[in-house]
Image (tube, rainbow over all chains, first blue to last red; front, side, top):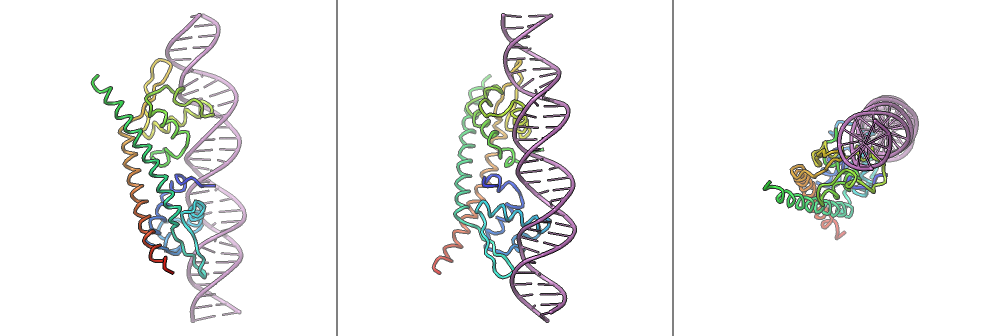
Length: 104
Length: 104
DNA sequence: GATACTGTTAACTTTGTGGTTAACGATCCG
DNA sequence: CGGATCGTTAACCACAAAGTTAACAGTATC
């Protein structure tokens, strides 16, 4: 039950798959080759990405065509913007705090 | 051994602690009350945050004063900027791709 | 000195995650 | 049809994460 984008993107292989699919749709083999893990492992990562809605799959004969889903992507991007904004705000506050402490 | 900020910040309680500390340093009790978990659980979350360098601790008598560490914060913010930039780029590419497909 | 308070460590349990091998389903192709 | 290919599911293992209770260390307070 992974539907938190923070978790879905917390694994380097999954981020790698997304990066590859950014160049356009690809089959499972093309999108996931070279990660150095077995096919079942890949299959599980794809499942996680599908559950978050970031990746969709179209079965074409014996191959599966993977695509990025822009709606979910934009949601994830928005979410990341909010996170970033939070961090930025925190940083400003701490920075301010440190400036007050500095002259000691 | 957690030193990946994506992982360190992947837990809502840890994000909550950081948000509270953004208002200024606080004792463990003040910074972590109301999360509905036991004290040892809190203690572990603090350990994780310390290991990433995001939070520092100063023992003052029997209380511990927690502070945010701006250097680590700014590192984390930079890292998040890079992630966001990646997502933005991916989104643009996919958007472009969809525009070409649209007139079908 | 006894007691209360702040917070940690130790030991344990449960759950989730990421990986494996083995087997299978479905499709393509000789 | 028979074999190769693409990818999945099933069953299992190892390990990390998050929580618990119980006990403790150190400090403040009466």
